[in-house]
Length: 351
Image (cartoon, rainbow, N blue to C red; front, side, top):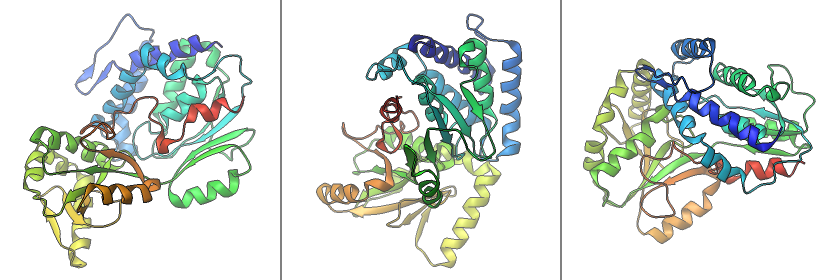
């Protein structure tokens, strides 16, 4: 299958996913679709919360819409134009996915198929219902994908390379079992924001999206703030107040109460506003409903620290061209590779 056909199939998928909105379905009769697919997706959206309490309808639709916006002809062509993805010797690529947020493994799935390889998917039990539906839709609109996509819950076999995402602990097992194969193995990473005290209310409010989207469970979710010594958090708390309905979600509320109790019993000093706790801590991975912060004295020493800790950091939010804009961490471009590892270059090298 030529690259153009692969691209066009994913463009059609993007249009299909864009029909799903929080308030209902906005059908586009000009795109390739079947009523049965819409009904199947709609059913899984409604049932997802039963399988995984973190998968709210709002977050699922956000994931759908993010991919719908990304899967356009312009971005897909720009992304793939930097590689030679035709006339390939197709290989079987095993992809082991995390399940922390909806469709978290979709970029790897897309990368393998857009590069012309076949994919063997081992999903997390926390997120295993949407991708098989997407695969069926792709096979419907582009039959040449049939035989190129396999889902398995058994031991992986008959593969040529591996892309695996997990915790620092599971990464050690991945290294042991898959180290002899060409591989990309990802570990825990977290995202941070650097504040100066000169941010506008609008910027701090947008930062709330980076903190609370997906309940902070994504590697692109901001879990820590770096602030100048003496920083006044009042403006920050005021700017993020619009996100307070999150505490009404029972699973989040339970985590808030539990983690607050743990912190208080340990006699940690906290700042909190009823739905988010701030704790001064050198770590990067904060628990749900909490945000760590650390003071800095000058930007030069902070940059040196971040360079030392770069293997723990996914995204850096802040003011300046080298940082991600406030509110944009969950809107990566196709070429914003996880852990900075160029997935398409890796897949191209396997030809």
